[in-house]
Image (cartoon, rainbow, N blue to C red; front, top):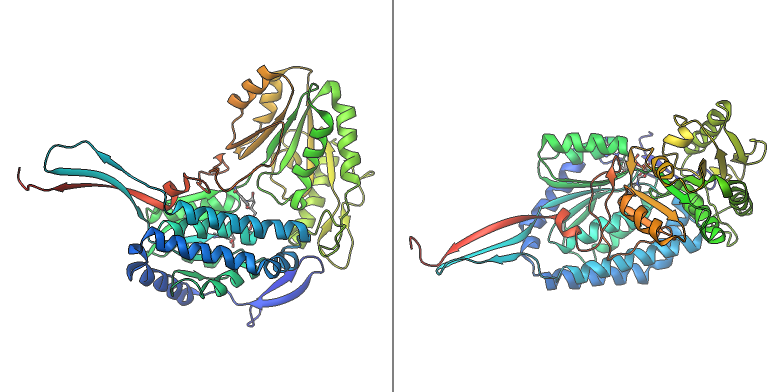
Amino acid sequence: MSAAGRPVLDPATGRVITRLPDTDGPGVADAVARADAAFRGGWADTSAAHRSGLLRELGDLLREDRDEFAALERRNAGKPTTRAVGEVDFAARVVDWFAAAARYPVGETHPAGRGMRTYTDRVPVGVCAAISPNNYPLLLAVWKIAAALAYGNTVVVKPAPETPLSVRRLVDHAAKVLPEGVLTAVYGGAETGRLLCDHPAVGMVSFTGSTTVGREVARRCADGLKPVSLELGGKSPFVVFRDADLDAAARAVVTAYTGNTGQMCVAGTRLIVDRAVHDEFVGRVAELAAALRVGPPEDPGTDLGPLISRAAVDRVAQVVEEAAARGAEVILPPGRSGVRHELDGGFFVNPVIVDDAPSDARAWREEIFGPVLSVASFDADADAEALALAHDTAYGLSASVWTSDADRVERFSRALRAGMVWVNTWGDTEESVSVSGLGQSGYGRELGIHAVEGYTRPRAVWVAHRPGR
Ligand code: NAD
């Protein structure tokens, strides 16, 4: 890294947009000290109504500056405009939701004898470190910021080093609304993240990112006995039975593996299809995926923008090579060549479909974070085999199953081991529904009413009105 700072790239051209210095040890200590001072200096004692009002102003700020935020997501994260705008809108809805949730009653009173009042309330954790990933830079940071602030914490946010610009803008503009120190940002990669996790005045770490990094974050937080929320990776199954609406399922699986150019934690990247309809269904999926347009994010006709880095492009190409070398059939791109999509020096790839890769091939097992669909088939109507394939992963973030058989809907919605299960649909998320992974996808708590459990601690209080009664 040059002295002028870490380069922040436009992934559609590979060119440097700006440089941003990594926050060093003293810088992290300063940010945490400001957040701690704000917490102790009054923020923790503000009324929920007050915080709610400020959050509403923050939501307004996102709405008023929607185009600017969307332009940053387009430029820095390579998102086509409609997607970028949709994410800013979702972020604003999340802030609105937590503005309301801040005022929702929490805690319990317990039956007690005369002269004693016993209750449980929830107290903020203090300074919350929010460490966010590069695939939804603004949105996922806002999930954390809004919840943490609603429940009386202050926040130090660290966006991913590839995509810091939208969060930097949010934090800069939020200073117009929030008291000093309530929301601050630090920048950089692993080292800045480690400094945050290790800082003794950080009360909890809310992390979204890869499973490998999540493990390290959990270990560091264990040393400090800090609560940690982990939203990690996935390799999610998309199960299709012959009795499903195959047209709708084909459209959905294409969205599930190519949306955001495959850079989604919940991406449906393992298609598990009834052998009886395999050829017809995979053919349909391939046709739809091949028709998608890979192109610059500012072009309204673009479906797939670039991946986040050159390394991500290389990873996709290597995974396809490995699968082919191990006997898998590469259905898309035809003839295996053309995984890389050369355009303006950007980090583009074409959608990929790999059929029948060995179960230990990276295409089947690893989170690729690119538009790569790995296909496996099960014998017609063999529920157990379909379920075994769905569960052939250490992750447990999401799963989707498609069938018109009501009994099977019931069986699969009960049996699928995943934090989010979609039946005859895929990808639905809303601010009022709490989400959390299972297995190697972590144990976080984001959105909805259960976020309060992640961003506060319970506290039991006994108040004697007649001491020594
Ligand atoms: P990443 O794990 O490389 O980085 C995530 C964040 O952690 C970044 O801010 C990074 O700088 C920071 N970091 C890196 N090393 C660290 C360390 N040792 N200590 C503390 N912080 C550290 O992930 P990414 O490539 O930015 O994002 C993609 C990953 O995020 C994928 O695995 C994806 O599945 C996951 N993700 C999960 C969810 C979810 O809700 N479960 C949502 C989005 C993304």
